[in-house]
Length: 619
Image 1 (tube, helix red, strand yellow):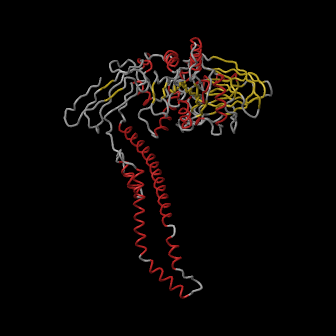
Image 2 (tube, rainbow, N blue to C red):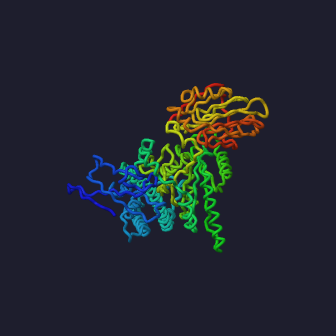
Image 3 (cartoon, rainbow, N blue to C red):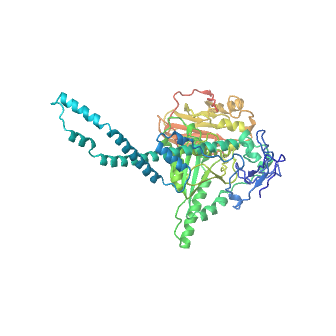
């Protein structure tokens, strides 16, 4: 229940801080009693320029299931309601339209603008008739002038006063009727134009009002201590509470609700994948659960003799971080590649979108697709692996929808994975439906989930990837920082093949003979070979590397046709005609995948043997 506290001064008023019981960043229930438990938060201090003296907590209990709490944060008392600006009416040039708009803004329910326009037309006709009567007094002077002209040159001007007078006044009644109709049509058209301008102006006014409310509410959004640390410092302040966080059970939380709650309502799953780390970020477990839910829905309907659900579950795949791929990457080719890989991963793909949360590319098209798919009766569940760009995508959708460049209430973005713990409803992302953010799915095969923050920053690219191509023969190896090693064991056709590394520009590389690779690694680990950067033990702590033998069958020397992907690190594109065999060494558990090439291009200049420094990506 809400509580209020009177200001001790007596003349300032009261202030309430309305707090959602669920943290807007991670979905854990908020609490103020146990600093070492999940959900701990502190009430923010009052700023000096705030007139109210005290904050009083108000918590509204949610009647929904605790595991699926969709309530959102709300605040009161920040900004007083303000009247709309009506000064725009004075800028309307036509006085008749200005009079109509003034009456309409007065919100007089008995006012009839059509009757008013008819009155204006009648008034205009009466004024014109009066002007015509005054102009008739000058007709004698006009005719006297014509008589004088005729007398001066009888051949040039034929004098016929009666005919001239008839010609001057012929058709006046018909012209007046036609002129009245035209003027009424003109008023109607002009009024419609002004209404359209007003609607556009009103939308802009509402957007500015939202911006003012957002600006006034800065510092008022309350999140738990964990999310505050992730958002502002990129780290978890209290490791004790981190160990107590509950795991998100995708099947348990969403399974029953989707099976029984969407018989007549659309459920759309937005699968978010990282284009730079597709195989490391594709949520195969979630896709499998979605397929199982749909199969059970159909089986239960068939067993009971009921018709199948009106709306089958829909899956849309969104490839994020398009801005990190080379500019010459063809979007249509990327869409086809993503669709093919998603279907190979078990997804029944309805549509594929390629977007960039950083530049805004493809966001508007995605929002329009969701609006069409939901059709006013649909819910969208955003599903993705940790560090797939899911939170960044949602915030980009909110910026596009609201028109605000800065958001004070946003999904927590952090380089540390696992920010969101529960299902959160996100408002202001698109029109025509509801959006729910689900926790990032843990992928242990991503090396980024097992390294310290300094090394993770080096592995995640911050600028468009640049290729580094080697012409390499059997018996040689490429060291990918101190994280991975690629040995060329055998080449079927020819002496050499082309290997192009697509990794973060902060990662240094080394090519040399396989027999010397281990010595170079141990000597330069944490120095010329980075990551690791701060502590070489961070890599050795991952355990002894595991080797995988990968056979690639290429189809061209002129471009890369196959990839060897290392989850969380990047990929090596292979240009060869025929077979080639590799030994890929990486920390135990890191996923190694052979696939069709994502980008076929080589680097313009090939790398020489020895060390190749990174490009030092700029933030």
